[in-house]
Image 1: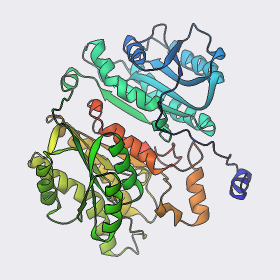
Image 2: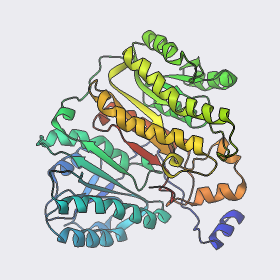
Image 3: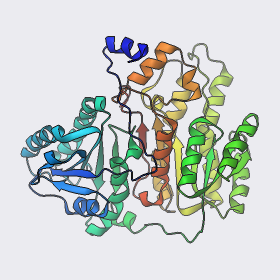
Image 4: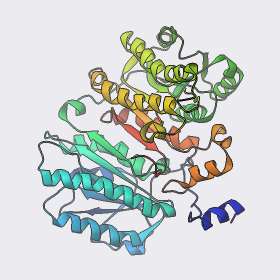
Length: 442
């Protein structure tokens, strides 16, 4: 044990478990325990699990004979008060079978005015339950997440399975190693199902701003691995680093200040050369930290312009000029501090909270053009910037998550690639935190 870990052990912080991340091999667990809080298993979930390259173990089998790497809990069928007792007994018993770095996924019905107050109470109770459970199992490197299915209208099981497959795969996989305590809602309405995107393009094109280093560079690498032709955007002082990053990917470099008045028009011209963008990742951002009492006006304006207003302005132009292809996606980088706030960062938190509101608000408008938009909110991620944080603050930032450690840029990149995938056409207007369930914020 290192001296740092000894010190934090004395303060009550356990030494963190090394997280198992995607290494190019099959990211899914071999054995998944499938349980239910009712007497019946949901057919849609069962069919989806059957599509995946995993061994599904149901409650009548004996999981103790096999290492269980994941549990899927079907909580979609609320009948009466017994569901709460079943939740307790089901989870308590199954935890004994789990190995380290396990995945627990709860699937439930979304809250709806068409459901009873008792049904909605149960769905909401699972949110609090999952976040608390995530903090209990996090010391073993394990995660807990919730998928809520919004299917008020009757749809075919095969359709719901198509919507559920990719999110279920992500949360069960090593690609979601630093995502825990999160809730994602799937829109399984008929009108959404009917918009399953298709594309005749030979090459998918992704645009990533702030791509020269750190999280942005990791995103470009991941998207390249996913088969995108990647265009990286950054400012003039980062030109050499951007060119190096993009040359390694056989991608393209584009020098641009995203806060420039004509940034949207410049990117529209670039889009026309590539038959439009299939994915746009708004990653560019800055911090200019000061308490608001001592903050110069240009600190405020620069942060708002780059982190928030540039996203709105650029999207407005690109959408008007139809530069985002049908079935395309937009992913915007928010931040945990936009949710929880942070002293000395009123400008930054304001801008990142604005991203969340913008994404939620414009998602309905974009859905008419079959375009999704979502946000990713990183927590403490190990980058060059965090390495400059004072030692004690940095170490506390690492330890203040359910997983007891900071994340890596690849954790953000995996989540961006997940939300940008066209298979996730039923996910839009949402913000997914990549924070290991930091104790700060919701």
